[in-house]
Amino acid sequence: MTRTELFDQIKLKQSFLCVGLDTDINKIPKHLLDLEDPIFEFNRQIIDATKEFAIAYKPNIAFYEAMGSRGWESLEKTVNYIPKDIFTIADAKRGDIGNTSSLYARAFFEKMNFDSVTVAPYMGVDSVSPFLQFENKWVILLAVTSNEGGKDFQFLQTEGQPLYKHVLSKSSLWGTPDNLMYVVGATRPEYLTEIRAIIPHHFLLVPGIGAQGGNLEAVCKFGMNNTCGLIVNSARGIIYKSDGKDFAEAAHFEAKLLQEEMKNLMGKYM
Image (cartoon, rainbow, N blue to C red):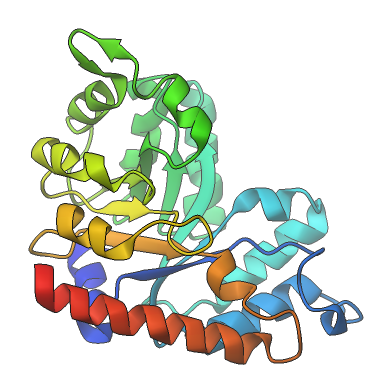
């Protein structure tokens, strides 16, 4: 998917909502467990219930890998079911030596047909560049994460500034705003002004809204640009809003609430 196509979806839906498909077999409604593929059935109903509001879906690959070959089958069916005009994110956090990264890229871009994959920057340019060789595919590089342990390295001072700023400055030369995004956690919106000073035009994938307590308006105030520039993820707050037979309806209602808030914030900050 191109940058223009992504922005067209944002304008059309007046939304920058990403629904995280962190689908846990132990958390989905019990009435689905008797089905042949309960994970896919859960995802299918969530997608149907939220696709008018979502501009992206982000399966967290670990939830599928943990189930072995059946999990990969559920994932493949899920990705194939997502409408083609909706952006797809493989939340895999890959990153290895160049030839291994090339195989990871082929797996997610050619075999699974994702639009993007999350990648760790720690091993440097040769571990990231193989993912950037695919036309109309995206790298989403980890920059500032929401987890408490993110402070262990991301904010270490080196040459007068925190490490994450070095990551942003250096890596922004590896790709362009047309094929490179960054992960910036919603629980750290106070850093967005400084981040935007380094990468004003790149899209940011922002997890942490909803169950993790991130503030959507703060994210928009400091992180939005004139093409929105944000993809805000909510997973548990949408997909597990109900554990009963009404789970899809509950997800629809929650996604609609977020879309309405996003529409208002786009009018305010874009």
